[in-house]
Amino acid sequence: MKAVIRNEFAMVEVFVDEYSSMPTLIVRDLRSGRRVELDALELEAFTHAEHRQLSSFADPSQLA
Image 1 (cartoon, rainbow, N blue to C red):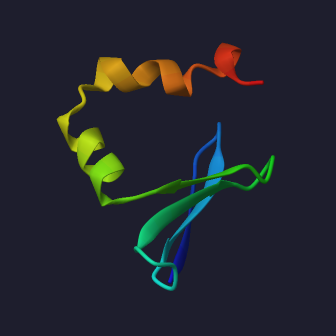
Image 2 (cartoon, rainbow, N blue to C red):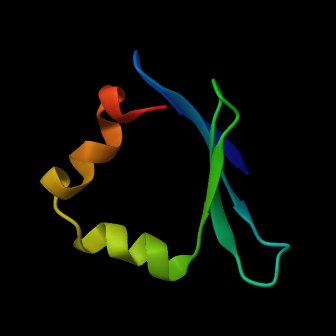
């Protein structure tokens, strides 16, 4: 199943790739086409992060 998540600043598509050797979450930026594949350990790390630690990822001045 695919889902599109959007707001006034971004639009991404997310889905689980269960066909590779290990299931991964795929997140694709619908504007640029860039994507990232995250495994279970990487996703778990997000649950331990505080919002302030993640905010630099969402800073538009850091996007290339």
